[in-house]
Length: 95
Image (cartoon, rainbow, N blue to C red; front, top):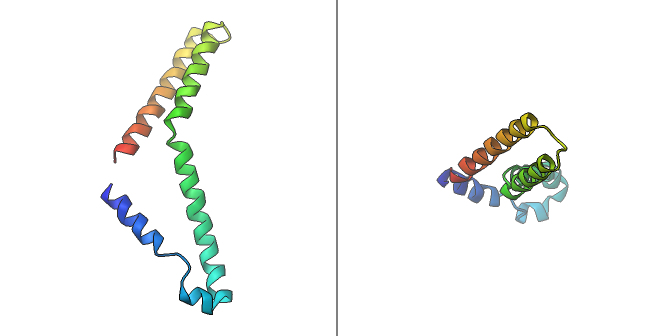
């Protein structure tokens, strides 16, 4: 976690400052793609580490199984994959 905090502090330093006001035609084309990339990365990480989505998928899977829409084998296969995904998310959040 200490590494993440250091990275977050460094990233905050990439904001727009005095040079950006003085030389916007030079600095903005450089910083805009960096900002966009970080924003997309943060959104992807947030989506990939959302436990509630995995739990919803587990509930939906269970309902489909109980309504005989999928076989027991398919249910167990998908349930195992979702449980592994949930465990991976929890391990990632502990780091």
